[in-house]
Amino acid sequence: MKTFWHWTRRALLALVLLLIAYQLWLLGHILWWKWAPPSETSFMGLRREELLARNPAAQLQYHWVPYEKISVHLKRAVIAAEDDKFVDHEGFDWDGIQKAIEKNQKKGKAVAGGSTISQQLAKNLFLSPSRSYLRKAEEAVITVMIENLWDKQRILEVYLNVVEWGDGLFGCEAAAQRYYRVSAAQLGPAQAARLAVMLPNPRKYEKTYGPRLAAHAVRIQGRMQYSELP
Image 1: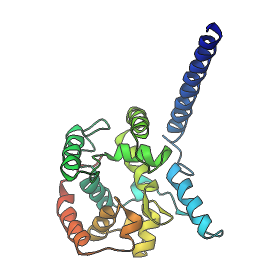
Image 2 (image 1 turned 90 degrees about the horizontal axis):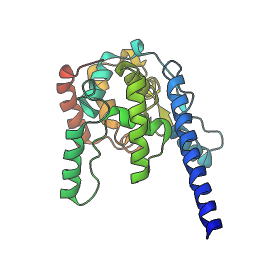
Image 3 (image 1 turned 60 degrees about the vertical axis):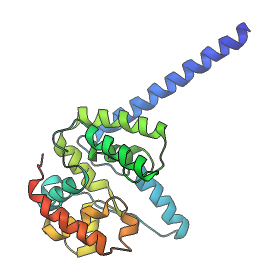
Image 4 (image 1 turned 180 degrees about the vertical axis):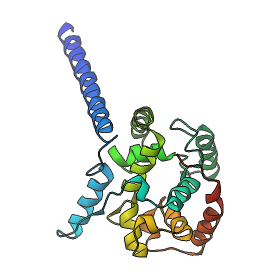
């Protein structure tokens, strides 16, 4: 029995040390990315593997642009569509989370997430699209790190540069070039609103951009003037 508890304690200690090491690994990347552009995110790695399985010559489309070279219309549109309390919260929109829970309970399935831009960025950088309580807990930890180590402008800058906008398509520059043949700096209000409403399911909406999504883009464009930028 003593031997059993001895090895149990050792195993638990090893697990704790591994968990601490992983958190330090995350922290190191977040500190580095405070100034340096991410070369690849977790989502990019997953999508690259999917693309290569279909076509060995496939490549991701991803090109980093600094904050000042991103259209102000796109910044406003994404905040209006994804997180209208972005500049005020500390990573979590508790009212939005509560509303999402109530909506999901009413529908009997997950139809709303309530995630902020900071939470979405945490997931994109380090995690996967899968849903579980463990992944959600890790997302929360990473969100706290990001919110405490980066300012809001850096969070929005990285998000707009790494978020998925189509099959193998990442970041606003690649999206602007793909859909409108212009740079991210040249996007107008209508173009920005259309890109913003694609974010919940970009690989679906790049193929099927129907009347309901178009109407949503019009609503977002009408709300963009109220978006507060960092």
